[in-house]
Length: 124
Picture 1: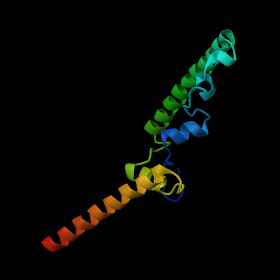
Picture 2 (picture 1 turned 135 degrees about the horizontal axis):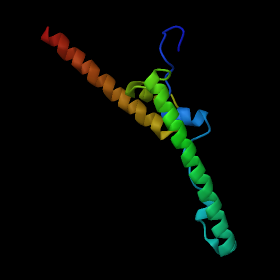
Picture 3 (picture 1 turned 180 degrees about the vertical axis):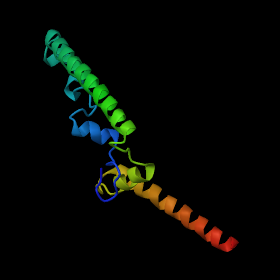
Picture 4 (picture 1 turned 120 degrees about the horizontal axis):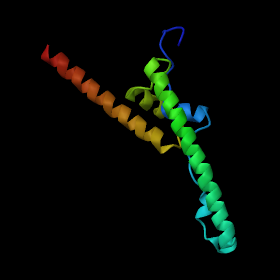
């Protein structure tokens, strides 16, 4: 709980998974190359090993997703609202396309709200 507002901390599922080392990033890009350089048996072992790692990760993601959902139900955590999510994304790196997209969405929303306020004042 936040002491000042007495509300649960705001955290997204993705952030929760990352904090618990359960980010769902599967596979290994190196395994997509041709097996002609390594041999078929070695490549098959590498693929099977990666598949085992992916299965363990999927179990970990499912476990922590369930924990997150329980914490949300109990009120220990609160997922971000759409606006909070946009604001967090918009405050990201200038090099990130998602940052620019979030800023455009926020600008459009602000323009819509300003137009609605103007219409409301004109009606009065």
